[in-house]
Image 1 (tube, rainbow, N blue to C red):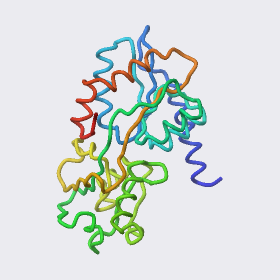
Image 2 (cartoon, rainbow, N blue to C red):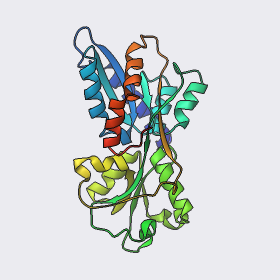
Image 3 (cartoon, rainbow, N blue to C red):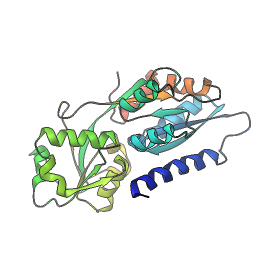
Image 4 (cartoon, helix red, strand yellow):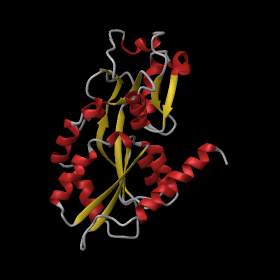
Length: 257
């Protein structure tokens, strides 16, 4: 069995096992299973805390992975109630396949950042990556991670993609790409702008890529069709679109309408 196929099957079974674990919900609470793209790692705890404070009868169980992996898991029957993607494509595909309840909704837009935990001058913008001093660059796998696809788009626009390919170290998701930098495995990497709000990412150097230098990262969500009450999922969706949630997203570096 190919490694890629084995990893896909493993992630699917991990999702099933997590869904089967006893939750921390108390008697009378509904459990809401939310699958979210890894760029939401730092903002989702704040969102969930506020939501659970408003709805004490609902317990949110969060799973984080790359958008592409979550999409594959849902297609294979993983028991998620809500999918929060880092793109607009996968929720739309699930909707077109008749696997959702209601149409997809846009909850935020993301920004792309080049980040290093060392002091680096970004006077040259992306072209600093051509320096012989930079040996390795982390990037989320563009095939299933929207932030990786955005980074590839920016590099292609700048005419740097093919030139820099020998330097790339691919992460399964944007969170892993960030971890490669933090661990010292690479000198610099493409991460989500929201990750700069994490205490782990304080210090170092960052370059926020200008709007228009890559295709917009429009993040959409969707309620997954399941044989259970939709009420908790609809309440969570409505909260994500509320002014209160938008303020939290904005605080973490996301764009909101």
